[in-house]
Amino acid sequence: MTVGWLAHRRFTFRLTTPPSIAEFLRYAAVQWTVAALNYGIFVLIVLLWPAIEPLVALFISSAIAMVFSYLGMRFAAFRRLGSRAP
Image (cartoon, rainbow, N blue to C red; front, side):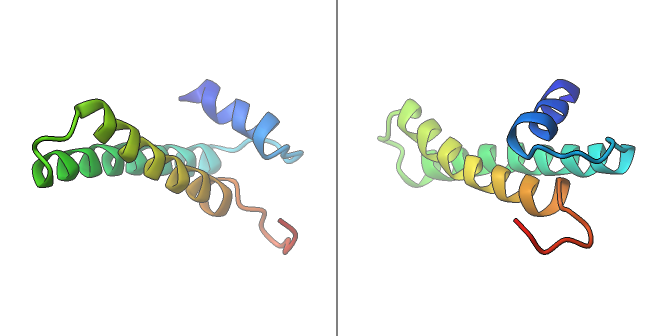
């Protein structure tokens, strides 16, 4: 998780501010929430459509989780305080 946090800071969001524990904790909270969301959506799909291939359900839940992950990282974990620029 630490490597993912540092990689997203550097390559995805190109932050120039120094890393902080608070930022890491926000990142971890987003990632844990997205993991639970991914699992929950997968289970819901499999329960609602028992005939679905598990790989298809995994693809759908992962695609939805990917969107929530990016949004959570962009607007919560790596938010730029005091800046209105994206």
